[in-house]
Amino acid sequence: MKILKSLSREDFKEKFGTKEQCLSYLSNEKWGDFYTCIKCEKTKYCEGRKPFNRRCSKCGYDESATANTLFHKVKFGIDKAFEMAYDISTSKKGASSIWLAEHHGVKQMTAWLFRRKVQQAMKSSEEFPLEKEVHVDEFEIGTPQKGEQGRSRSEKKVRVVIALEYRNGKSGRGYAKIIDDYSSKSLEKIFHKHISKDAIITTDGWSGYKPLMKEYPHFEQKLSNKGQNFKMLHIQIRNFKNWLRGVHSYCSKETLNQYIEEYFFRFNRMNFRDSILDKLLSRMVREKPITYKSIKYNVT
Ligand SMILES: [Zn+2]
Image (cartoon, rainbow, N blue to C red; front, side, top):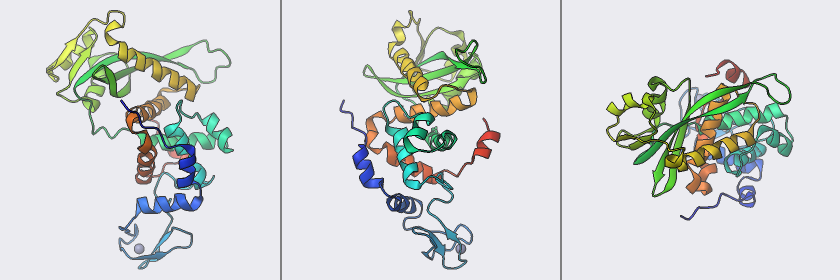
């Protein structure tokens, strides 16, 4: 299979190298030919105070290209924000907040918060369930506990269930979810959100999957045979864990979810690497802004 290369940094710079280019993109993506004032809903506008703002001709409300998007109130420069989005979505190993902070000369907290916004836009729409052959398995991730120095003595295990399409001997798309335990009630989450009823599903022999067979007619359980029967899945689990280790060191259950969404947003677009940034940016325009405060208090 031919894998398209991601947008090179040179091409990126040519497209989004200046603040004007970024704001122009946002303005087009947000309004294009269909401007509507968010205050009075009239559709006529003139130029606003700042470049690429639009000012309502009726009520005078002046809106920036970044307002009401995830780029709202980004203080370190819109061009830097675009480049961070580029780094996060296209870099092979993923970009940690520490790396982003160093590379772009911002505080680590600033990089972390912006990264969190990018992750918000990477959340699955849950509209495209996995199809055909799907393998499901569970695994654990050890997360060092907050506040412990040096070599972590106690690791808290977080349980994850993963589903992966198996297409002509290769991995297709995938999804994963954190679960509280291995009960049917917990395992069904990934089935209901991410697996088509028509899929041909294979799991190991765990009894927790049995009740799901009623809902999914093409369901088979196989002995794992020390992982031999789910080789592809185990390779992908290993890849995910390696990636996770590279992008951050401390991981709570709450933030792990965001990283899972980020990983599979990228993973499921592996064959569309040239358009992944566009996809991400356009989602960032459509998502409502979030603030550090709202993240702190809205941990889900
Ligand atoms: Zn108006």
